[in-house]
Length: 375
Image (tube, rainbow, N blue to C red; front, top):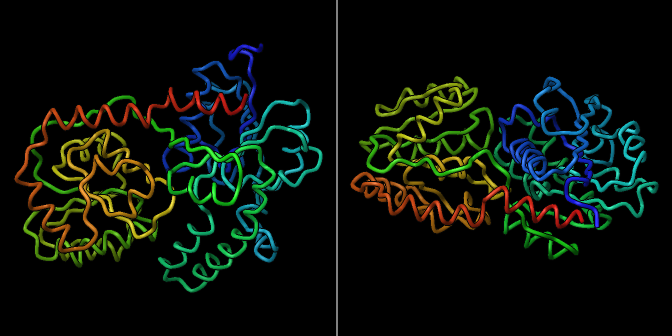
């Protein structure tokens, strides 16, 4: 029997997974790290488009290969989704044919090679980061620019059709329970393995904070809409401080926050600043109107913050319901925030959180499930 230390695995990533600073690449990078710690020899293949070649990846990978993603507009007019067609590489497929190691494809983005007849019989596993056509449909709903809205709608339609290629995969690894249910109703051999992440231990503080925090990438329509909802409907008459922190806020959002007496915006915080903000808040509020994938910022707040107030869509099959306080409308959110500001976050609650996260979101345990799948 081949030992774990002698196992090789090709991983095809939709982007260069370092720095690990947004949802999808966080899962890819910390999965690579966890596999490496188990002695797996990783051959990483990255599509490159705007992020720099990362020497950090060489610490964990046996080999790292880069392929230019073709972002030319010709892909917009193809029947394939743009996110797939622009990641087509003959050089990648040829490299994979040099051996017979199993292949892990990250996201539907990387799945065009399932059409390559030369790879028939090869063990190929797909990590589904989302139900992609649903994700793009929701992006279209949140978008105000007419051309972007059309692109997202068109991409959603193409992705729905292209998804059928997954019948050729040996296994599909879903990132949430909700996604697992969806894929299992359409394909065989679907497994739930939660997102890999940077958190090793729960660092939440006991006691009380004096503000509510919302954090996220503020250049993303979904997050902008969430903040605007909080401004207009929740903190409009709530005498409790709100801090909004995140990347690249728009001038419109800045202006909206300025109009709110108790609100403060922190643009482009460093990782250290964001940790301090999460760690010291009384309530971390995480809401979304797009129930797709797993929101890794939810894990960030549970590992590092006090009370976590969410809506149903934020939980989206994460199995973390019992660690969060739920509110699905503005009135409920106001009531819960007022209640939580009277409470102290206890050591007992920290211990309960630690136990739950250890069971479900422990990278070491979850990576073993993936290794067993690879065989």
